[in-house]
Length: 305
Image (cartoon, rainbow, N blue to C red; front, side, top):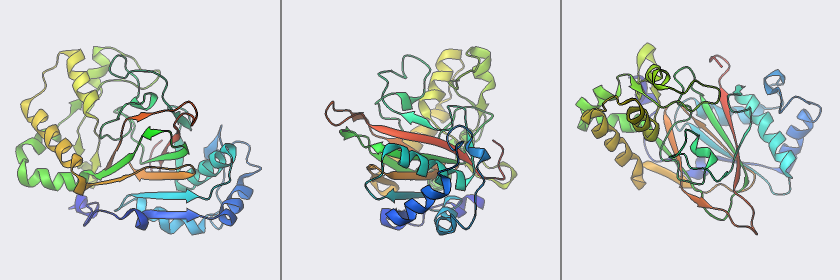
């Protein structure tokens, strides 16, 4: 079965999925992109010389199957512009970038509350809950990238877990719930520029687990599923609630989750099709500066944008 190719046989060791980018290597990559004026505005126009990024290719091969994520760590000493440029170039070597929120979206607390308005949780300081990125039926990023410019003061830890392993658990313990999770399920509409009404929400429906066309795809954020049902008055089944409870319980267990705190210069890339991620709530501090991450959505070259 295709999903077994993605299951973790054991919890990944963070050291095994991390790669330090030394100053010499970072300088070489920055030199390759220094005259690329469109790296931020039109990154998909940037041509990639395979020789320039050959050292990264073995690492990124781990993105398409287990373990499904990699943490690159740049040495200290680079300023924000250099880190952004390095991150943009490395992101482009993985595939094509999507611009629904801008090619590079600053993840910072904007003093907003996602429970009071239809906005991404990334604009708040709240815990995101376990989720995959994009609630839009017509688009799913293959890879989510995050660059850390400021780790912030308290909290803000990253958590990564595996939906393929959760699938195995559901198949054994909750098969009737799994059948419900494979049905089309409505999600709230939050993508900028979208139509926000009951009909749009009812159209924005797709499974949590999708195994059609010999692919494994997991798409989940419980809050937007429950919000969609609340706004439309569409009944939410007891099997769906039980299934989501089982998923959340599985993800919450320490033995199923890799937990770490990103530091300045860290770049996390994770597969958004079979991994699920979370962020603990955080607090900024005036003297330390606001927690600042930069997110990008990436699709492999053979995937639709």
